Length: 308
Image (tube, rainbow, N blue to C red):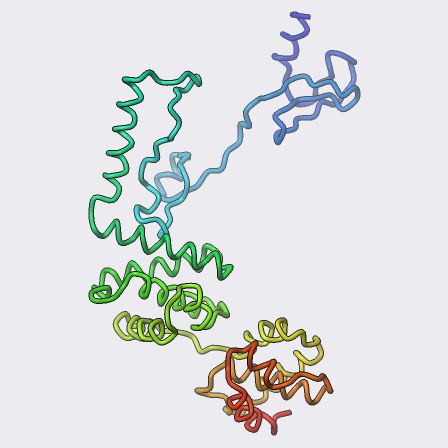
């Protein structure tokens, strides 16, 4: 048995036969950490480490040296993810618990480690802002790309001194909305203000401040992007959606929707398409889903009617 075990440990993992049944081929399961015979099913080796690894390259020197580094840096962390993290476990590498004296020493090291990470007011500011950012992004189902852009805008606003006399939550919410606008994510001011527990006008004021002071260039909103959101909530058929998109396209070519709220244009186009396709949807239902008033839909409806 000892000789067989020695043979298995020395066994190369490619083009070899099983030492038990004499057949093969031998399969290497990296996910499970096992080497097994495909013929008899015997596990020849288990719990081995995966020799491959992800190499993340940040600089040319890392690429030349083929350096293996840790997680990539992130703007959504106050320290860019470069700080040291100490485990809360009071056990050593072998799993043995620390003695009383060592436990006291380790706990004091943890305290100083936490203090060293937020010893300046700017660090405390960023930590609070990015905690709120992650909470809001989670509620709005936004990905890491949007969060990174929002964190970049917030850091830039902080550098420009735009937080003086304003709350952290107002500026980070405005930064998140600005990131959504830049990346073409369909989230309205009302949606962002709702998850931040702020008034819409407060978020809008800070958003205008960011545009003015930081010279941000925002792309024009496309009403077509709001069609799916409204239609899904009201449960409008696919044919009616396409009819609404076609109406918006014609109106856009004629320059009839320039300067108009994209949400109201999308809602009015859907209402017009529903009437043309004989789909019974009221102005009240569509207005509620779009977050606009029925009067607004009627006004936009009159402007879009000639493009049907």
